[in-house]
Picture 1: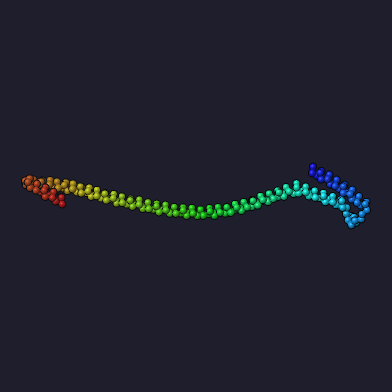
Picture 2: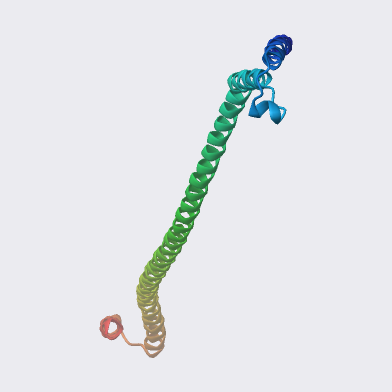
Length: 195
């Protein structure tokens, strides 16, 4: 539609300038431009056509294209700035991550050392408690053995004394010695056993 309008306008302008040029030439004026073959009315018509085409192109072609190019340039600059920002953020995040990893490794090493120390202390306490318990059991066992030994020795001494008294009775009975003397032997033996 615009093209048809331009063709119609151009044809009309050319026709008008052509007629005006022929009228001026027939009027007989010898002009410098006529000498060089320049048709002034046609030249003016072509200038008007050129101005109209430039205006239309600027209004409906170059304007939107320039606007789109400007928008695209702004978008590209925004993307470049976003990329720079994201790159910087990525770098900062990477540095932060490295610092945190080092910190976490240090904390983990400290926790492991603390746990090992605590485990060693707990082990030593358990060993010490076990040794104390062992010593206590040994002492109790030795005391019980000593008591049992004492009891057994007392019983053995008592039985030995009874055996000696029985043997002495038999010996004294065989020799005709009386009972009061045997009582003195029992008392003497019991005193010896107590010592």
